[in-house]
Length: 120
Image (tube, rainbow, N blue to C red):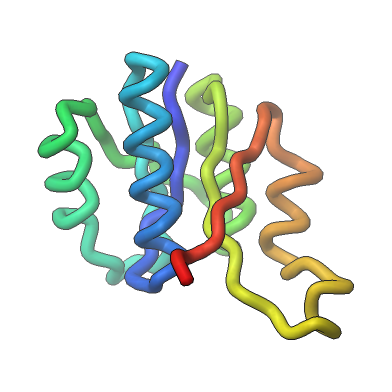
């Protein structure tokens, strides 16, 4: 069963991709990429996976417009082992609440969720 990860051109997205590639290699499974936006370039993510010897493919198209819903949908459709998400650094007050998208993924995903933060 694959590892699902969102593709975003942000520090959080890059960290999530790196963690997902590592996790897929560790589990000897494939990687399913879910673009964060319609115009999000996925070729760098595919190249990162290929360089690590991990098979990667794009998630099947989804009717969902929210990124979190598309990640959950991809996990359900592919029978994912794990979903990998990147979290933003937050202020002390911001740490009291989790982003709405991350919260939705954590609550709705049909499998474990690995949350990573960008490197310091």
